[in-house]
Image 1 (cartoon, helix red, strand yellow):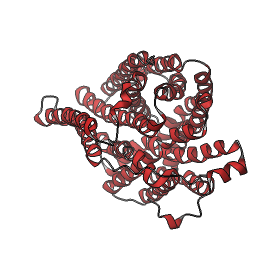
Image 2 (tube, rainbow, N blue to C red):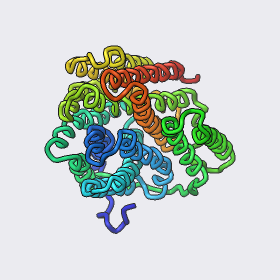
Image 3 (cartoon, rainbow, N blue to C red):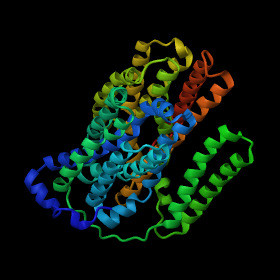
Length: 474
């Protein structure tokens, strides 16, 4: 973490409020949002580089996907200590330290010449991003009243999704002109702006609470997460009934049992089970897990499908996602307003339904889908995604007590990102499995991707079932 003497004197919250007035909460939101944009860019822009990396290093898709899965796994696990770190070092130093780490690893990754080193830098990038991403909910809860939190989430989401909306297009152009190394450097300008502005616009945090760190709880959750990922990859390598695959499944079940037992006995567990006593939060965590699985799997699959199955280059594959991403950026603030003025649950349900249905054209049409059709279908999917994001956050946190906001923020982000890790792994393994069955040439590769998109539709149907059960308890 960033040493204390590296920082200028931390501004006081009252002094900043006196200087900027009501505008201060928007300035703080903009600073944190800029840092989160950098972390989101690191998450989404790399998907376009999968075929180029495979060609450059002579690797298969199931090997190259570790640069993405490793990042997402590190991002997910790094979220676990965020509530404890907020208590120990405060919001300001945690944000600045994680932002600096993201900037340094981005530069190092661009300079790498070995695929193992690139995966290592991606893992470190993921740790930095994992520390940053739960802070978005914290800044909204701290600075905005409940009646305007939907709008704040919507405006924050506008910037966060506008970046990955343009990222595939920009990444494709950079990839064609400068190679995959340029993808690493996309985050750097945002890290610099967020770091400099954060030094002067983020107030000093009071850290009076000093709970001991729950090493055992974090260790159990890490073991469960890694075993679940290993279970997915083992399915392709060894099959469902192989001893290793079954051992990983049993290990996941044992870890879940052990964590529940530990959380009931520990004085300060990393995740308090009392959070899940409120049904809206518990079901929201399930929705976040399944939604994250479908979202990240689709973000991974679409660019690779366009290049491998339809034969488009990286630049055109990225451009196909741009209109939908721009629509998403416009829809999210509107969804935030709807969430503040109406019940968030129906807004979320409609969003999930639209997003899930958008994968059916890919599944039904397969290789016969036109480029214009891809653009149109992606726009429909992003419309549903835009409706879902603010409503899911507000609906999940509606019944959470103030003292549990830090943990709730971490759990909400953790479940969504862990779902993303599983989603990318499942998508990559599933496509490879079907290609082995059908062949790597048309029409076999087309059938493989069609079935993968059909699987995504089923995943969102499961998320919809959980969303319908998110009615708050009286």
